[in-house]
Length: 81
Image 1 (cartoon, rainbow, N blue to C red):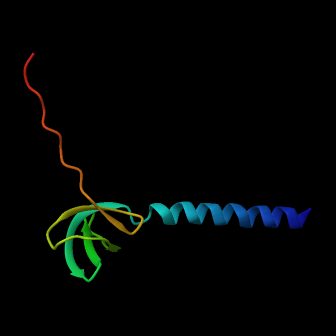
Image 2 (cartoon, one colour):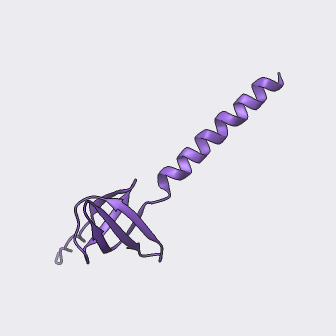
Image 3 (cartoon, rainbow, N blue to C red):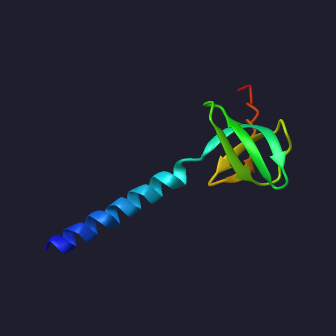
C-alpha cells in the first residue's frame, strides 16, 4: 500500500513541475542582445530570458517555451455608427 502512495506522490510531483516549467519563460519584451540564433529578451516584468529564433536588437517579441514569436500588433479600432 505504501509503495502505491509513494509512486502516486512522485508521479504528481513530476506532473506539477513539468507544468510549472512549461510556463516559466513565457513573457513579452524587447530584444537586448543577439548571438547567432539565440537572443536575450528583457521582459516587461524586468527579468531577462534567453530564447532561440530570428530577431533583431530592439524588436518587440513574445517568448513562449524558449522560442521567439513576433509580438501581436494592436488592431485598429473602427469608429462610427
